[in-house]
Length: 388
Image (cartoon, rainbow, N blue to C red; front, side, top):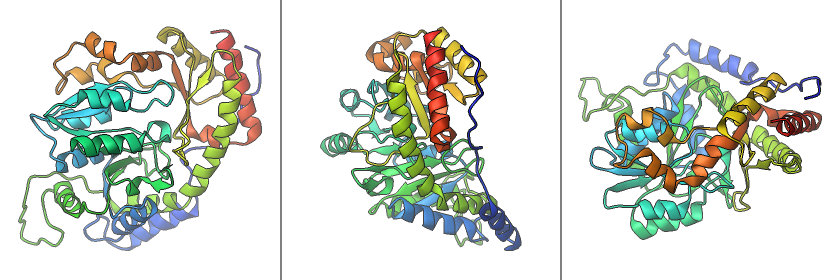
């Protein structure tokens, strides 16, 4: 590959005086946990409003958000949850840590989102939830999933860890009549280093109240006598993290709009490279948050894909290998795996197997850069693919 100057991308996380002011505000209020301060309460109201939800509950991280949501939906021993086989392992492990069984299903080869027909075929009398993951901030087919849920009575849980500020046919995540979870881990679209949230639509106030108890050791808000009503854990977010997230939320819309615009340019450039196929879109997903800039090199072996990623990193791109199929990790088989062999699952998840081998993603800060940087990015990828 020809030597060239590496493009310069914005740093991530981003912060300014809004975060500094928030941290001082949290410090000086004199109470640093959610039960005595106001930062977490304020963030929950603001985040719920931003996503069109009736309620939001801030928690320690995105994995805990999934566990908590699944628990209040009744997931536990003897139940199953349908999960896309191509996702970060937390989608699966949140189910398994509750003693339930994760049932992986294939994804669409273009969007990398859950295949609704595959999900329908996997439903059994034990199925307690279907978990679409909005991969890279591109919303899954929420129309087909809503119909499947209505027809079968199996509720949806949206894993929206990548989808802050995304929309489906004009509807925000909280307006899609199902519970959803978010992550605020360091690389996410808004972050406090760690953190998560569960949002609840209209009509789910009872589950919200149950989730509050579960996330606070089973203890009611104003309890002074240690009257723990139910079993729970400590998943409470602290006041400092919430103050940072309030500042992050205020610039989310502008950043999402810029990423969406930049992806239009970059995906067009990638699509012109011989052998490269950018992640596909869905016109019904009218606002994509683009947590990742993803593309495939179909037919590339995993070994060569990994070498390609190393080349891109060496050229200055924040590039990564795509998620491994969850059933191809040792962690998946430790507990809560279905009564199938690894290869049996792989046979019914051919798209997941292929994407896991030949897909590459770039961190979303690439999409916050200027147009010259995106042209340079595409040129680097073209050179690297040509020699891979």
